[in-house]
Image (cartoon, rainbow, N blue to C red; front, side, top):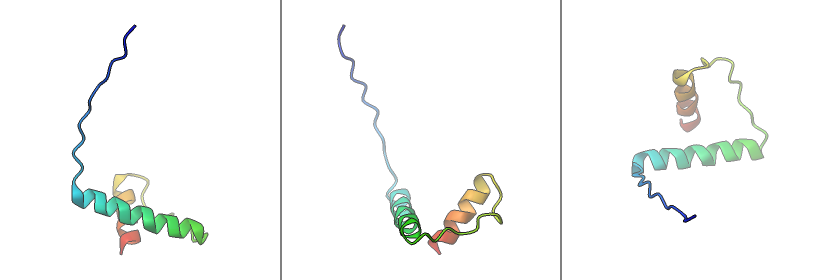
Length: 58
């Protein structure tokens, strides 16, 4: 039985990659410092997640 190789191209938007990198850095620092923000004010849907991310980035 032969091995099949599937090529799945992925184009990553540089702006998205930069935002993700910043979020990773911020979250890493918060974890290291045991600085866990209160997330109860955010809705538990995509809009709440995006608002939380924006608050982290600001």
